Image (cartoon, rainbow, N blue to C red; front, top):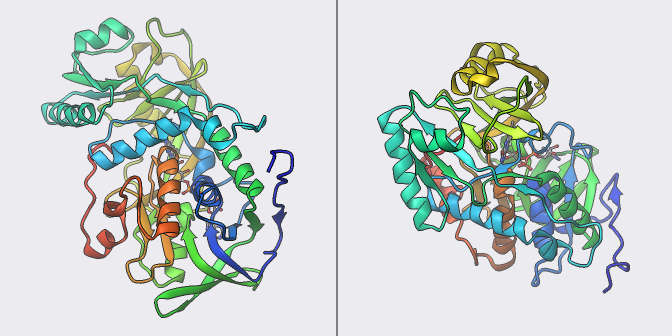
Length: 411
Ligand SMILES: Cc1cc2nc3c(=O)[nH]c(=O)nc-3n(C[C@H](O)[C@H](O)[C@H](O)COP(=O)(O)OP(=O)(O)OC[C@H]3O[C@@H](n4cnc5c(N)ncnc54)[C@H](O)[C@@H]3O)c2cc1C
């Protein structure tokens, strides 16, 4: 079929059919990744419905992201998940829309992450992680303070022991374009997006048989995918499952500095204080986790400006003295879908209710994990097993067993 002949499936106000092979709850980056990978799968010709409560996507995590990818994880599976993101983004146009003039290459800026260690235990963690990442083909290197200073003279390195830095396939990528293209191409492949909120679901024995929308409309389903972001535990509870995923607020500040930094472009710096900062055009984007860090309502977007004055700015000015003179241009609050057990994604079918599929709890790395998760969920639905990357260590069974998936490089 030629590109011109494939029109977009409309976004509907109510589902067109009574029944779908797959119903995806949530249509942001994860829901749309699953929709696209499934719709384009060579062995899938079923029907797909994406139910989305806010088709403007204004308040979802995807709209509040910093949009970076890294290979500096401590768990080999997380490294491989992000390596697939780098590969997917590199080949994006060829994979998603080679003949489609509206699908463009995804822009990437490889400024890399720079993890800084000011104490021996963390320096040792960075060294151990670097060895693992290098073994898996990542470009991570350990830098001495002198090496850091030579390349990035604006840093204060006086209190540092080392840095861990990778300039290959690490940095910002344009996840917004990826999201738009996935949504459009999924609709072009026949996926129906409908406005609505799933409020309950019917479970018969070991199957979810239908979901019910706030409108009262009941939709039968062959499988259901939970891609509800910070609201994932509410959706899981509809099926009777306890999912330890909750919304946690994260604040982002865009700042302008009085004088440009001289030297190589600032890497995405993870300061020992926990403050992170990266370049964004001629400005800088910064933030850190609040302390305390309670669960919040998913509709709570109130800002905490004190965190900038009390924690972020002093840490920035200590690490990069030129940041003593800056002004905040804009700021926003967004939510991590925080997995209380281990900060990592829960993906795959429920062990007993096989047609309920989780894709939840991404914390601060869901954008870069979306290609591998979309592909994995599609494989699990089509083949009943993973065929490329085995994601089963990230399955729901570990929640039941209370056995954490260990990842020390959490931001
Ligand atoms: C400040 C910040 C910085 C980040 N930085 C990065 C980064 O640098 N790199 C990275 O990889 N990741 C980053 N992330 C994480 C990333 O943004 C998220 O992991 C990702 O966007 C999660 O996508 P999602 O589709 O699971 O959730 P969301 O984007 O929240 O989407 C969930 C969707 O489900 C819908 N929904 C919920 N319940 C229902 C229902 N019952 N019925 C119908 N629809 C429903 C919602 O309306 C929403 O649109 C960051 C996040 C934040 C907040």
